[in-house]
Image (tube, rainbow, N blue to C red; front, side, top):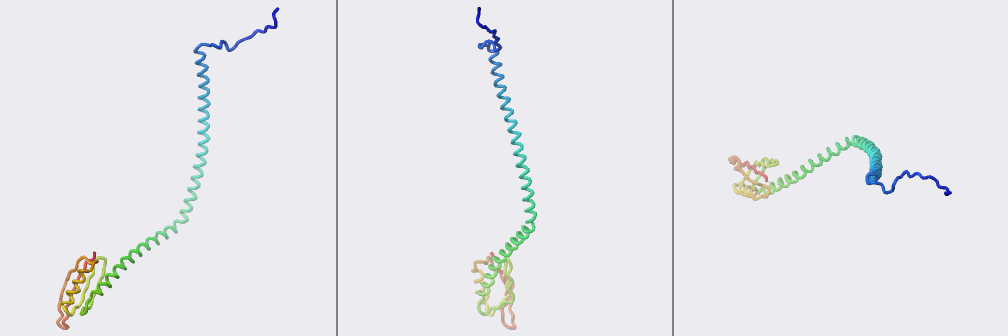
Length: 178
């Protein structure tokens, strides 16, 4: 008699299956891995989308806050810019006024004895002088001094006259500034 012999059923078949079975087994294994990897990537993208949405909402609320702050400070900004513009203009006038003041004082200092000013007009680009001279040498010295002054580009005598009543020479001089 035989010992307990149980019948066996081999569902796996031969371990040395043919190439087609091995290929199918390999393809199914790789296919499962590709599906799992694709699902992981899709799930990661889905979760990342939620983080991006949260950041977008935070940025929108921050923009609203910043807009409110800018709106609140708008009037102060306009006041500040107006003040800056006025300070800039004042600075320009201060510089040009200082230059004009120096030129004005220097021209007065160039006046020699025997000379009196009737009119002295100082503008941005020129100086107009109407003066009386007792001597022709005073006029010559004054014009030469003006020509040698560094801030003066050119000197022109527009009109020379002689007052017989008090023997004064009147001259109208225009000086172009650099």
